[in-house]
Length: 122
Image (tube, rainbow, N blue to C red):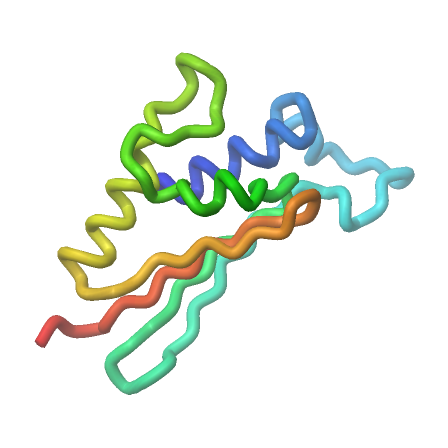
């Protein structure tokens, strides 16, 4: 849920307004400018799955991308974020489920978080 909430925030920041308002059909807007969150799942091995959550927001600068899983690190304005969402997500995925969480981002274009977890704990 933290990753989805961050994707929504990224789209709102890119648009500078409420995302729901930008979903109103507009024949003058190119399809690539429509805010999108894509969720993709894939079975990698008999006991491993990936869940990828991507947005077409403005991306994350490289310096921030290196820190996104640190506790209390946030790129959001004061009062908007605590910097704990991705840290907690990373801890749950890696320590509780024995998986991994990766951030792939292209500044000015998109961000994708890829969760890899075993289907069954051994």
